[in-house]
Length: 380
Ligand code: C2E
Ligand code: SIN
Ligand code: SIN
Ligand code: FE
Ligand code: FE
View 1 (spheres, rainbow, N blue to C red):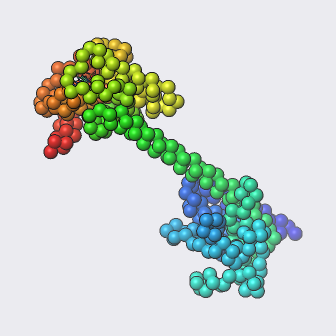
View 2 (cartoon, protein in one colour):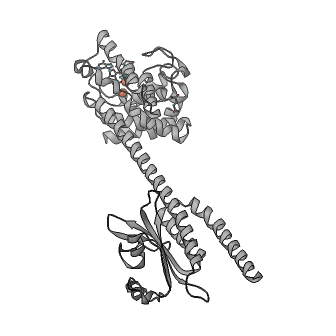
View 3 (spheres, helix red, strand yellow):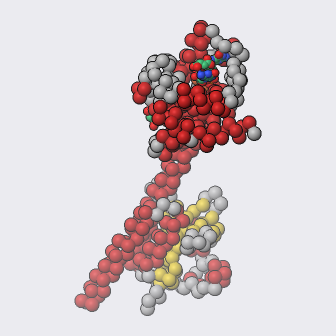
């Protein structure tokens, strides 16, 4: 009697140590196939089986699939095949002493793998809604008896409850990640569509948007902003002229110089863009609104729409201002021809601390060759 009690105690110690070994590994595994392998291993150790697999239902293909080990492709069987299929169909566990004496046994897998199945245990996995989502299958009890006990069935059932919960939450995480990615991609795409829309009406090429974004990004990097901020600026910059969608064609595409009234209308593109974007709840769109509203401010305070001065101008706007003017000078516009490279460079040196923040001009000049390459490539 004492011997049995001791055996049981050491047995539960073994189970506990198994759980403590597997739980952190399972908790830190993000990928579904990795989870399946880990939980199959856990199931095998829990009940002392020679083999154990965890099958999940693929309802689109009417199949059960599993992953047995890293590097091995997934295995698939028909949804109704063998003991596992029976357990899935009837939401019932099976405890089989000799597989070959049971009609439900599908011997094809033994034939295929040159293996001899004798004792088998299957336990369905139930999801939170009470539907079968998969099945545990343990094969060939190790040790003297050679058959699984009622206690083994209880243990595999408990493992199945734990595994089902783990898989459900992994799926949920996967889904959240996917829709987050989807949302961010949508956001990015919309930003470019919006940017292009503001540009498509003017005779400037749509590439202006892209170049201003890339040059703003480079300047942000050289200025020493963290990577994340640089990416945000790259994404926000394409919308700096969004407010031009409200400017009449006659002004937007006027071949000559604008008169004072026309220029006053033109200037409204900053505050219009700021209002359109600034009310968004999205951080990125609000940054874009800030850029739209501040990219024509000047370091010396003589810019528009607010006449902000120095560091009162949002940094992203100061950066975009440099990129925007660089692009306006280096390219032809409906109202002006492209300037030669050297003249553009001299203009920035002249505007250092006047129109633009000195440190930004310094970075532009320091990395001039790399940055201006954009325009040499264009004219090549
Ligand atoms: P944009 O063509 O993208 O020009 C952006 C900015 O580049 C201008 O902002 C200005 O700061 C700078 N820039 C452009 N050309 C020159 C130049 O020849 N010399 C110098 N020093 N800077 C230059 P700005 O002036 O606030 O103009 C905003 C927008 O208004 C321009 O965007 C353009 O769409 C329009 N615009 C400005 N002037 C005229 C013009 O005379 N005729 C026409 N049709 N549009 C104009
Ligand atoms: C322009 O009118 O095209 C340029 C005005 C400026 O230098 O800010
Ligand atoms: C940024 O680095 O996210 C821009 C901050 C600013 O506009 O001041
Ligand atoms: Fe502008
Ligand atoms: Fe612009």
